[in-house]
Image (tube, rainbow, N blue to C red; front, side, top):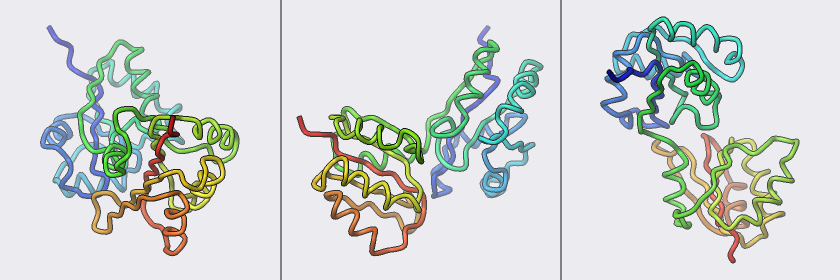
Length: 227
């Protein structure tokens, strides 16, 4: 007899609410509890689709405190879903910690396919997609320059996540460590009304974003070093 999952990882829209799958909606309606990065953000999504389920916060500030209790509840038969504010849970968020502990407890995990920001941004860049490396968010301080120096030698396409107030700093450092002519593509507000992707040399991209107020979460795609 096949064991049913105790935890479902359910991708949520990264901007456009229509980008959630029918299977995701059906699963959210069937689970006992929904774990969310931000219950206010997720509450809006659930209300939009008329889903009424117990909602509990699970984020980077409380994951270690709540893990044992969540595992115990799953062992007693409770079925949970984990969602993030936007995109696939476990990518650049603490979801992987929960997945690891659920598997260690001998329970089953199921991950539904769905929205994520990195793949559309990578494809829209026009850079090679057959081989790429995803680095998530760069370290804010310790190890940042060391990592950038290492990535400057990377021949695969590089994908980063970045926040609006750090974009200019990141582009300036790419210019410094990768060279002024390195091709870069920045996508912001993906799937939303003001979606934008700007591609060019790092100098051109930096100049473009220095002229405007940057809003929304960003994906930075950097062409790999030519052999």
